[in-house]
Length: 145
Image 1 (cartoon, rainbow, N blue to C red):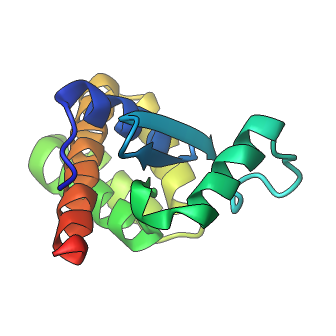
Image 2: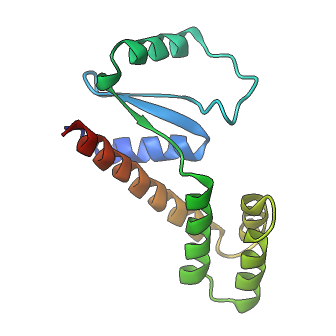
């Protein structure tokens, strides 16, 4: 049964937001992170990262993997933020418009960063990622049963 402290959940969520993937080593209660290879095409693994991947291959049941949200989930999170938090109609319309275009996350971030909602968005997104980490813990535990 995998259970994480709030500090561990915060740490994993923060790493996922930075574009990393995390592996939680159950027997040592240790978090390992490395770049998500989809985001870092030319990234060479360090010897330590290669060792961790070898350990995961040898004993996969001892590791829980934590990944970022899928683009559709990220998109829904941005839409929910607009619906729940943004009170100015013009800004809300601009944000919804940004989400309908290519590079939606980039357009959304540009508009949010220039608004009074920037810190609220950062906290909202962090909270949603903490919930996402907890969902992945639940899924890991369910799969173990």
